[in-house]
Each structure stands twice: as structure tokens, then as C-alpha cells.
Length: 559
Image (cartoon, rainbow, N blue to C red; front, side, top):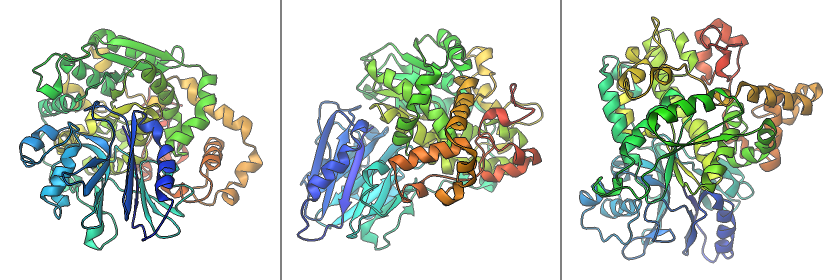
């Protein structure tokens, strides 16, 4: 986890921008507390705050090409860097052991074919590259948007890029969430992000007759977890006791005793795998995680927070998350509290289970999908929006304390397998549970009570009283008249409930004005659905609550 800050298209003779860049970059230092670096040229500035996970001894970024005329600031991890270094990038004079330096090598070899070599990267990334000789910049974000990235222009027309909105909020009249799977090459004259990532599985007709073998899922996920254990620092796993996090934890345990960076030839530097769970006293997740950890064999840590600790943290959570989305705030608060404890133990990277529900249709509302086509199209919509929800939550909740979250279920190669499965084999129907094929794939790895545990959304699983307490807090702070006049105060993304109004008010105190508001998603949801899926069941229209307990007749404790 790091942060990127870039200023481009600087006019000749401009002064004071280096200091300005340092000030803006400092707002993101929580993401990269280990070291800072800056490149300041005549036409561009790149600043970087580094969290060192791989190649911890090299010091600061930005990274420079051999003749120092090409410079790169990147937030990310390139899992297949060794393969690329020994293959298409062979012969490049690497100056560090950073996994991200391979981006410079690929650009140097094919500067006009970025769309090609971006598709050769296996990893999570958001970067800004500047070619001084050509006065050209290249911006790109990973296919799913695991790493955040925002852009904007100041009043003088200079182009800015940053890892978080807080670096741009008082500088750019407009701020844009840079789209995942896109690139912006100033040399092409277009001036707009264009897609480089176009997987065939997006279209239902391409996957309708796809494979149905659970073994393909197991093999692909094992490979993804193994890839993502690349680290020179102590790491752990987030373990809620649900299916997804338990599978990731069990697979990490399988590989944790060998060092991935040496091709498993050496023993791991930190061979004991630590797992972390968070919840209120007596929460479903804490109890389930304890059972899962006992079965897997991790060194397990339970982080129990009080309702008051959670309520007190909400404002800071909204500032770090840069959103007022109700579901995200609910789930991010306990994750934020957990991240602080994780960092205090010296852990700098964790694997997490985000993405499985989008890929396999794990949310309980998927039980109402009318057919395989509707099911598949909703999974694609969910993946398209994930960077505004769960990816944002996992990344920024952890980054608030300088911890990096990796998400194997969103590994590019794994998606090529899991999203190409016949959607009918993933759809919960005819008595099959949600994520049935994923459960079948890992039979024998986990006890049945974990493997076949019903989906529990994170904000519910930490304790049912958590959401109830948030609603009570909002009821006490927001009057009926305030909510009735919500459209006058908040004409964009108008909040419809007192809880949403409270979060929106806190957001406005941290991010005044409209630029940041337009980067936050809107629309009704049932148990984390997209607005389109509400049409699946007439009852959904009257139960538009993002909690999984809103799906009556499916959740065991529905309301």
C-alpha cells in the first residue's frame, strides 16, 4: 500500500508547485508511512508515500528508468514480476528489487503499446508514469480497481492524479474516480481514459456453456493465493469465519511455511500465520472465526470492540473511506478498528475474502435471480461497481493504518476461470445454497459447519446490534424536519433515511462542496444488490435495506 500524487501539464515558469505537491502528498501519508520521495521536473511532478512490502531495503520511490528520463510512481503489487523480468523484460537493467519496476521495463520496450503490456500484468496497481523526453504521461488502474485512483484539473488547467480524494479536494473544481481497467496516455491526443481490459466473460453468450467442474475453481484459487503471498514483511489473514475468508485462510496456511519470492525454495521468514477477527461481544463472526482458526491452525486474534468505540469512530472512518454509502460505512467501521490492532502487532499485509460474493453470486438476494442470464449479468454489474464498495472498504480501512489488503478472489487469472463457469452452475436454485460450486470445490478443506455456513454480510456478522445502534444514533441526531428538507441541503445523492443523512452530513464536514460527492455511488439496494436486481422480487421495493437480513425467507434471521 502506497500513495501516488502527480501534477502534469505544468506551464513554463510555474513556481511553488514542488512544495504544493509535498503538502498534498502528505495528506495521504497514512497509506505509505515508511518513506517519501518526489520527482520535480519542469513539466511534471510525481510524489510518493511508500509502504514497503517487497524490496523493503530500497528506500523511496518514485522509480527511475536507466537514464532517469522516465519516472514511475505506483501504488500496487505485480505478482508475476519475476516471470516478466525473465521473459519479455529480459535485458532491462533493473536498479531495484521492487516488483513494480517491471512497469518501467515494459514501457521502455513498448512505449506505444501500453494496452498490450498492461494486460500482461498480474496484480493490483494504480500508477502514474512520466516520460520526460516525450513530455508524455501514462496513467493506469488495475482491472477491478482494487487500488484507488482519482484525477482532476486545477483552475490553471494542470492535470492532477492522486490515490485519495483528500489530496485534491481544495485544488480541483472537479474530481473523477479513474475507471478500473482503463489507461490514459497523453500521447494519443484523446485526453480521456480508454479501456485496456476487455475480458470475454463479460458477455453471457460467451460463458453460457462454460465448464462446471469445481476442481478448476480450487486449482485456480490455490494458485492465486500462492501468488499473492509475495512479501518481505510479516503478513496475516482476515478471518470472519464465513466461507470466503475461511477458504483464503486455509489456503494461505498451506503455503505460508515457504517463501514465495524464492519459488518456495526457502523457509518463510515468518512461518506462523496469524489470523484476525473483529466483532462485538458474542457476535456470530467472532464465534465462527474461532472455530475456523482452530480447524485451520492459525495463530488467532479476536478483536472485540464496544458499541461506543464503533460509534465514536464513524466520523474518522468516513474521512478515510471518502464515502457516505450506508453499507460501506457500516462494514468499514469494525474493519478500521481491526486494522489499527493489526498494525500494532507489526503486520503490514493481509489477505482478505472480498470479491467471492460478486463472482459467485453469494449475496442472499441472488436466490431471487429469475434465470442464469440475469444471474450472470448481475455478477458483472457487481464486479464493475466493486471499486466503489468492497474494494474501497478493504483498501482504505486498512490503508488508514498503513496495512495492505490483498484479495485473491479478484485475482485476474482466477477471474478468467471463475467468471467463465456456466452461470447456471453458480446460481442458487433448486435447493442449492449460494456459492454452492465454491463450497463443493473445497470440500475436505474445512469443517462442514464452516463450509456450509449461510452467507452473513460483514456488517451483520460483527453483531446484529451494530446496525441497530447506528440507526439509533442517527435517530437521536437527525430530526424529522432535517430529513424532510434533505433535498434542499443535499440536492445531489439526496439521503433517504436518517442514517444516510447522518453519514452525508459527516462527509460534508470533511469534503465540502460537490466535487467529492459525485464520486460516491447512489441508488437503492436490497442486501447489497445493484438497483437493477430490485426488480427480481416485488417485495424488494418495500425492503430496500442493504443488510442481508432484509431478504425475507432466505436469511435465517431476516426481519
